[in-house]
Image (cartoon, rainbow, N blue to C red; front, top):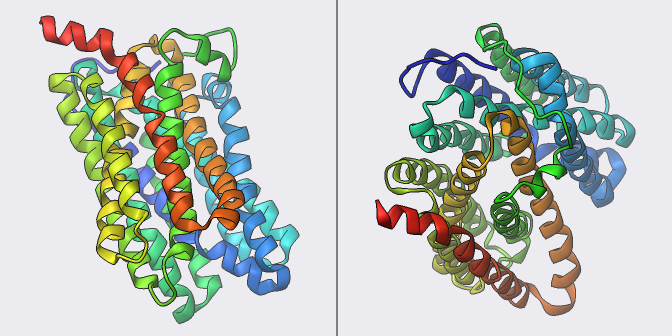
Length: 389
């Protein structure tokens, strides 16, 4: 347990946590789009490229399942150190070979390191932040971990043709070492964890299943967007896809912060349905793949809805759980995030071939619409409480 006492939103541990997460996640995203290219260039082709990403996400999901136990036993500081070490060492060792076995082994390590970093962050923020400003604190943290995607994804692709794969991998290691500098100043306390059940057992807790299911539905759509938009736009329109994904990446952390700040003052529950609606409208715009303006605006709107939903669902889950379950809630939320994105990408790949991309995106709009009813029903009791204040 972290002893916090009365303190401002941006306390010293919060700032150090944000900087550590910023550096480590930038290193991860810097390599995320180029590892598949690297293994494909080594002779493994599209199969190797797909496996490198798939193995990374599989390791992430599996590690998230044991994170509450790990944090309860070894604490936040040791856990973060292990995560940063896995990210940094695997980045450096990629220089040795582009052979598929080597890349897959490093992908396993990268996925495990990612799981540690993304679970530790929200759990620690939930303990460090004043309870009445938890939503805003998580929103600020969301900006810190959103910036790496904005910077890392395009910069990695830009650097490889200029300096090659090796220096970029070493840059990822350097960012991990930079993150490691802040680890000794992180709280050393262990995560208070309930003594029964695992991560999935938390779904039995009253009030957690609805926000998890709504969030997983939106992450499913996000997995489709990030994976297939560059392939779905007309030939010669890669600039449109790049701009759309940039707009998506910029809107997401801003909306996550704004939702946290607004929710702390007016109630988080009032934002869940609007977040789903904005995501639906955004995905509907992407159906018009021949219209670059519709695609760019649609991606930005979906990013805003997705960002708001990230904060709202996480804060609602934490509010409905005792502090002893914070690590488990963080792991469950991240499991919905990573699992939803993976299922969306695989499922859409099976559907898009027979029906085409426009119809496929329209089907995703319909799937998102299914989240409206549970999101509305789930927040009615809290809306009533807010209206009676």
